[in-house]
Length: 268
Image 1 (cartoon, rainbow, N blue to C red):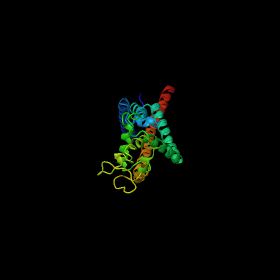
Image 2: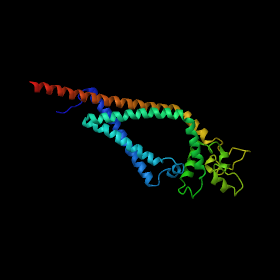
Image 3: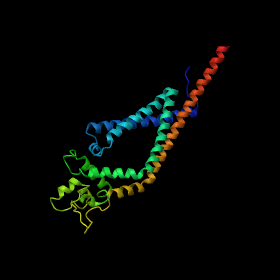
Image 4: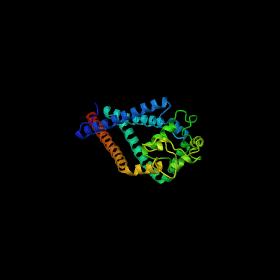
């Protein structure tokens, strides 16, 4: 005899659980595949994060991709085959993930200042290698900084003056001392300019806002969207936990009923 989910609520929970976790499985597969592709091709931003002594983005993509596949597999197998043990493991993992998410948010809020200091140190470390074909042989650091400045319409970490500071942009300043002028990267220039030396007399040729302030403004402007996404993820996790709990409860009830009937038949 099999122990099956028979109620309408149980079947709906099963379908919903499968839809969500098959989607997560596919997303995990995509992340894993992209992570492997970029890693085998020296990695997107690989050199940037290696220089900064931070785990590379391709490695993170592979890690989270594998994690998504593993976690969703427990739910898919448990729901399709109606295996209570698999569902229990899945519920335990999701519960741990929810707790870790809450702890991560709390730690980020508590250590926000220290995290910002470390981020600034990392960016200064990257700026030292900007334009240096020896230490940045694939040009990844240079491309990353250029794309960031173009995306946020900013220049330097705290402003254009960063690109004239030999302690921050070591190689860039050294190379541009030959021309005896404080040249800025072209990514600092506004669209209608192909070059823009730093000067206090006029700022019409380059962006004056630093990328730290620009990023802060971007986050503040989009905090509502970020909050909605975070809240939606929490609701989704709670929903799939309830679905898994419903399926598990119904299977347990079915098993208990079978055991009672079997004992009654044996005693007769």
